[in-house]
Image (cartoon, rainbow, N blue to C red; front, side, top):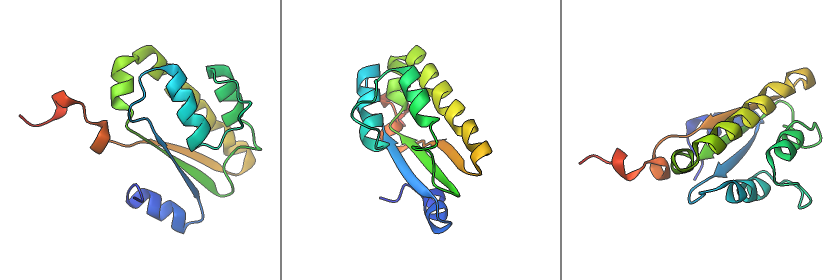
Length: 125
């Protein structure tokens, strides 16, 4: 799966595309483990919000020039189950995205809708 036309356009422009699939994630520990795998974070990564912010803001991890697209899928159930954690996660991702302007690179984060993101109450009845 290519994760849509935006991912295809970004790949064609030379961007790196990463997918953070949060399907089945119900807590911070699982969120951090998904980040380690999907974002190729080092095993020594601290698995807390500060460590995630530091790692995503590190130019050694950062997006290759011209940029990286991070597509977050399956996030809505986690956001509903743990709204405070989800708010913090969004703040960390937003901060990382703004960090790379000084390095002539771009990190864009997209929250994908649909598919596994739909909650049972979102289904047509």
